[in-house]
Image 1: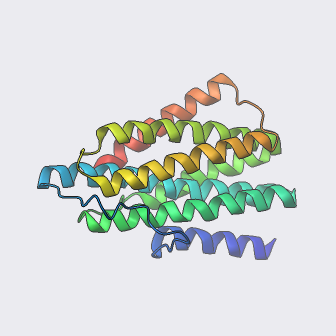
Image 2: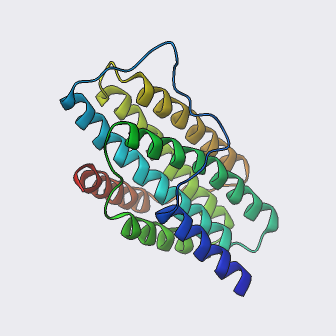
Length: 206
């Protein structure tokens, strides 16, 4: 238990304060250079900040769910998904730097809130925990699709990152479904959408 708590603390500190490192190359398009004016940079930066917050929350959720489960296979499943989300965390942070923007100032708060939700989901049982993943990833996928429409048309770099993230999130949902997820109750899904709306609205500005 002490080792698990130390590993969990280390994961939180790395997510919030360290520079993330991806295992996959950032999916930018070398043949489609991005040229943006100042307004477009500000818009893209705000949207990518929201996406970066989403990846901070994903790290917290998967870390908490891995901590909560007693199933070693499921724990490995959560940790593998977390590793792929680390790529997203690194890509969005890199893109923020390129746009001259910054991460959300509230990242510690976002992480703590998401960790609490992940721990609660994990305590409800493995099937519901997986159902929480499915619903989360479906909502994230829809959110990323909306960003594909809101990002500046000429921001090929951000759009390539978001497209790859969207594909990965859809696969995470399918994997969780195949692992035995059960559907979350409608009131819980509505609550999750409300919490996500609050997070995205605040993170866009702060």
